Amino acid sequence: PAAQPKAQLLAGVKLMLTAGPTREALDPVRFISNHSSGKMGFALAAAAKQLGADVTLVSGPVTLITPVGVTRVNVESAAQMHAAVMQEIAQQHIFIACAAVADYAPKVVSEHKIKKTQRDEMIIELTKNPDIVAEVAALTSKPFTVGFAAETQDLAHYAQDKLKRKKLDMIAANNVAALGQGFNSDNNALTVFWPNGHTELPLADKHQLATHLITLIAEKYHDTHR
Ligand code: CTP
Ligand code: CA
Image (cartoon, rainbow, N blue to C red):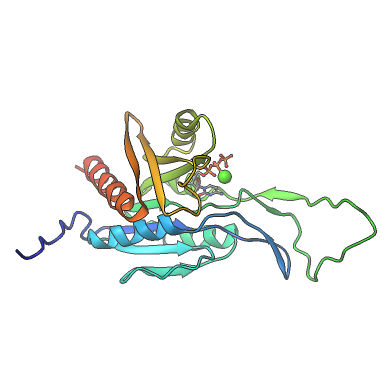
């Protein structure tokens, strides 16, 4: 028999995601960053597209291929990611913050390569970056806003705290300390929290997991717009 056409759960829905790490420059040749591969964000973008959404993917530097039909905006720093998101957010129905945004950036970016000196120690001053997902969730006409929480301990506690503090509609938490899941892995498991409930999405390939998570997000999005 012919394959069943996919239910177009997100037809006519504009969905924006952030993905990957950000890079915070120290000088023209150096930066502070993290191990995010962008795989989960790209898998979510592909899954959302499959459900019929109009998808914009704001991505930090990653080595992944853009899913077919997805509009990609490339950025490097948290400041650039913030600007790219804010420019288009008013048109979006759903926002998913999957990026591992650097929390801090060097206070000054040296115009020239920083030279080694006689001293054995070096101190770099950092300054806090804007919290993109919190800013989106604070908008008066906010999209359905989903965050991620990467934790190495007290997962439920920290995730529920972020859900509340950032006024998110949903948060997907993963234990990045567990072997073979999370950052830079092909497999992942998530615990998803919303204001009055939660569910477990067990360890799976990131593409399967993305389909499950996007379906859950689409259902909750439609629940809140009924
Ligand atoms: N996030 C964001 N902008 C930032 C920092 C984080 O949009 N400047 C988003 C992430 O994309 C994620 C969520 O906020 O969806 C939680 O990120 P996380 O790093 O787990 O939480 P933080 O609030 O930064 O707290 P901490 O790193 O101290 O755990
Ligand atoms: Ca953080």
